[in-house]
Figure 1 (cartoon, rainbow, N blue to C red):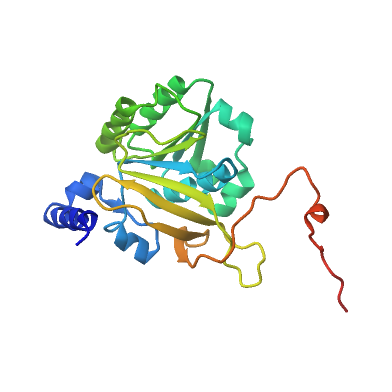
Figure 2 (tube, helix red, strand yellow):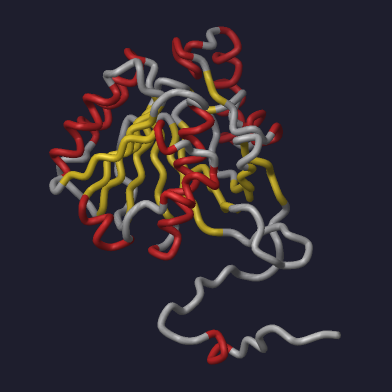
Length: 262
């Protein structure tokens, strides 16, 4: 029998004996996709910290959408705090209010804080995680930083555990490092499952890189439903997803365009 499977089975057995090992004192929140939630042992720990990395530079927007989905699942009605490193806004642009609204995030529930330095972002995020009135705190950082280390993630985890507020670290343009996060994800954009190939619901290819109290390595295609505020598992479609060229017209890519009928 595979050693990783044995270790995973042992951890699951310990969780059943003491749910606090996995869920902590604040329980779990589900993603909404039953097979995925079952693989996660019921869902993701609320009042814990979870890390999300985009697979590539072109996947930063997808990773941000996945993070917002997790925040809405963790706290459907509570206020949310999004702390953004100024470099992120310079590189990727401002948060698109209409896009957030279409995901189901009410504007009056979201507070966005911009910081020029990672250290300022850490302080603001830590204060947010200490506030039990918030549902989730998102800290979006850009690039590697010696300040966002194992010690910082431990402080985040302790604050989240005490208050019950879920912490979500969106880390762009850097490699995963040791941390105290409960889970670590890598997110890429995926094709919509629309049967006609049209623009459909936001779809993410989410890979569970690390899970502190269980097996990892799974990859799921998850579609966000803004009406139910939940994810649904979809089948991966054949073919790679290629980001469109922003500096060339569609005709240059061989796109035939729209054809008239009738």
